[in-house]
Length: 60
Image (cartoon, rainbow, N blue to C red; front, side, top):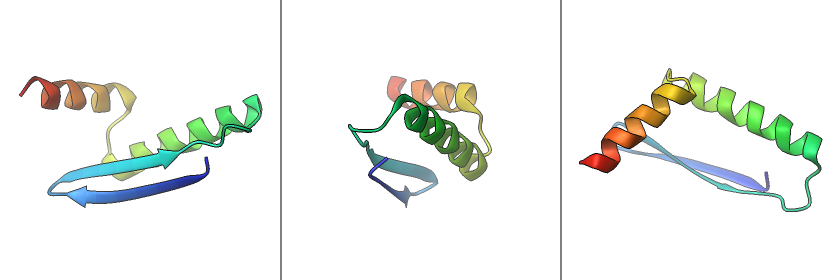
């Protein structure tokens, strides 16, 4: 990952990432694992819960 930015809008945590297009498969897997862990720690939601919240927000 080239960079990561995050900010809050109300109670929502917004994240913007820029990927490294030259990363190896191992690096991509490692970055994805660490990013998912970061999101889980920051939100207290696992991936499935975050997906459900996102679906709920879209349907509004």
